Length: 124
Image 1: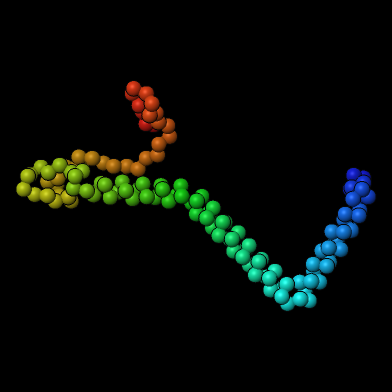
Image 2: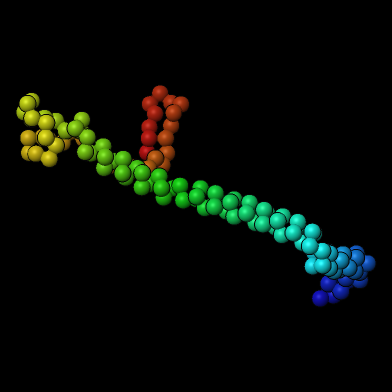
């Protein structure tokens, strides 16, 4: 509390100036339509830009969730491809039949660690 009183005592001239400046700006925007319209338009522009940046940030933060969904969907689509099945009879090409044996089963995965600069590289 004492330091607050010392701060006010030290900078009382500057604080009074800022208070009077704020009052003058308030009266200017309240009683002058031109300045009021410029202030309203500027504040709408600034708030629009802030909302746009917030939306971009929230979209960026949701990318991890979207990537997981896309990886799962890709695995499901790869499992349906004819190339992931082996035809037991050469003349038939039915996927959902017992004449086809599954060659591959795709699953979605996440890379935790990898190396690219060694002789034997790995992906975890």
